[in-house]
Amino acid sequence: MEIVKMIVVLAAFILFFLLLNQLEKSEKLNSEFIRKILHIGSGIGGLALPFIFEKKSSVIMLGAVFLMLLISIRIVKHKITGFKKVLETKNRKTFGDIYFIISILGLWIVSSEDKVMYALPLIILMFSDAFAALIGEFYSKYKFNTGFGTKSIEGSVTFFLTTYFICINFFLFFSDIRSINIVLVSLLLSILTMILEVISWNGLDNLFVPLFVYLFLRLNLYLTAQELMYKFWVIMILFIIIILNRKKTTLTRVAQTASLFFLYIVMIIGGIKWLIPPLIMYLGYYHFTPKVRGQVKDSLRGLLTIAFTTAIWLAMSIILDKNKMYLIYIFTFSLHFGIINLIRDNAGNIKRETFRMNFLMGSIGKAFAFFIINYLALSRILDFKMLIGIVIFIFGGIFIYETSMKIFYIIEKEKELSGETKVFIASGIVFACSILLLGLGML
Image 1: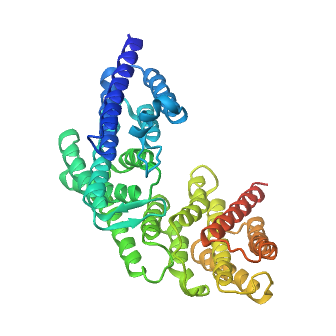
Image 2: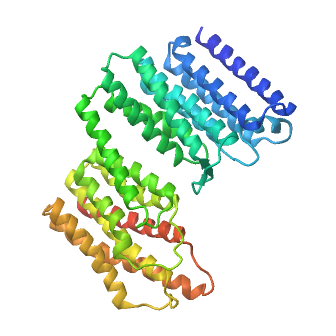
Image 3: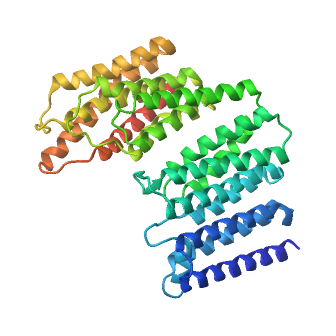
């Protein structure tokens, strides 16, 4: 019986896809509109799965078939090229359809027994994302570059309002939580998913948004009103800090928005102790590193790279020694701070291929000052092996970065690396040093 159901669902999807393909060929509808019909139609199919199938394995097998079908459409040219146009427009290459199927499978695996937890993430993704994209496509006047593409203020506002409307009504009909909790949960979800949609790229919002909604509901749905109010004020205070500091940062507006999301997640997961190092770096690097004339704004990509190489230790603290992970966490920000000092100096230094030992030692000194301030204020963990390792790797990491840059400029005298590339290199060095520090701590 399950096999029959799988065949029927697969056949229905293929017929739906053929219909959209004919609409695309007829050029009667805009390509973006057709993609959103596919988006909503796929979501409705996903919502129906718990009412159709009894076994998890059936949906997993069906999802695998869908993934192979979508990947084949992208790979094979010639005869099915028209199908590919249904999945992406000429000006926008995206893997959103593949991420959408992965999201449905992920939600099915973790929450198919709980239809509420399974459904709300998909409904938000279906309608908030579709409405935001359509408003942004046809009615936007205020667009901004994310570093990965163009989005609009109108689209983001539409995403927020649609999500809030969906959540309010969904909780009223399908939950038993108090009215004040409904308002707070809906407000927090709307703000955070809107930010997440803004900073996603190449269709990754189809993966990030539903899985984030699921995690948020698991962690927050049944908290007290006081706990939810605390989380609301956290994001409001961080938002005020970002706004007040917007002219004292080299980040693009989208990267500043991503900073808000990153700082909030760190605060909620780790608390004030884990928030302080990234907040100090965010507020302090502009004032305590060299100024660059004609500064090119630092991109979202660079910020995400730094966020990954630091936040991984917060995640690791859940399963490993929290004290050791916190020392590595402080170390990563300290080493980043020292290297950022070098990056900003090199941007205005015409003799980049020569070593300036005074400035190099100054960068090391700033990295140590950053570490010592955070260590004395927040940690004071007496792990001599780790502390000695931190001293060695701050020296080593900064010397490795500076030496690699000097070698590059000696070889490529006329060539200039972008600030984003320098951040990628710096983050790779920081990550390698932090892994070595972890190995030393585990000995």
